[in-house]
Length: 190
Image 1 (cartoon, one colour):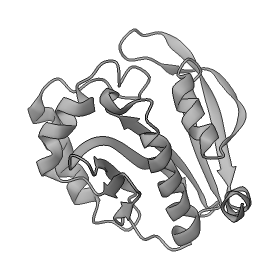
Image 2 (cartoon, rainbow, N blue to C red):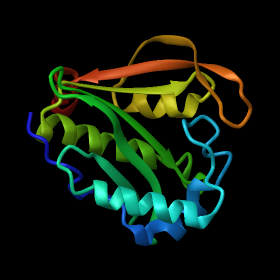
Image 3 (cartoon, helix red, strand yellow):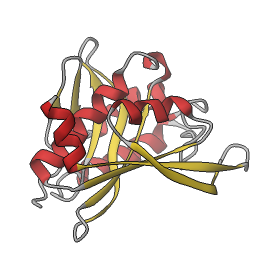
Image 4 (spheres, one colour):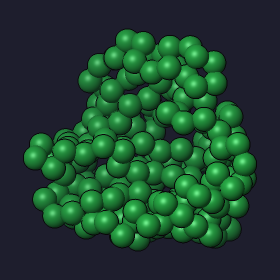
């Protein structure tokens, strides 16, 4: 494995690039303040723009580390930051990474997150050298599960009542899905 950090990655409709502090207004407006987008996430909607500004300044500084994999999802058509995808945990010894993501509601159902996840998985397998990539979603969040399935992530199990929703306090089951490098390579060969 060779840690390469958050290189700029492109797809047909997207650019994935490190966050900039200047993205704060778009990030806040497009998804970070939206309680529907953040319903199943590990963080609550941002209370105000200053909170988002401070966070993105931190993320911009963190992006200098070659072990940080965190991208703003930029919609080429508008040039706006519309989402977030990152490695939320990794184990270099085991060559494994866990990814997380979120997207502006305005682009749900258009294959945007599938496109972003596929590009990030390809980069993590083919260039960085991870062997396993995992992702989790609330059992009720079937749309997120479909994104993972379209990218070849197989369901491995359910963690019962493993996540507590910040907005309601409700406990939900988490579905664990993963893909291994040989599975990714087989998909790429087809």
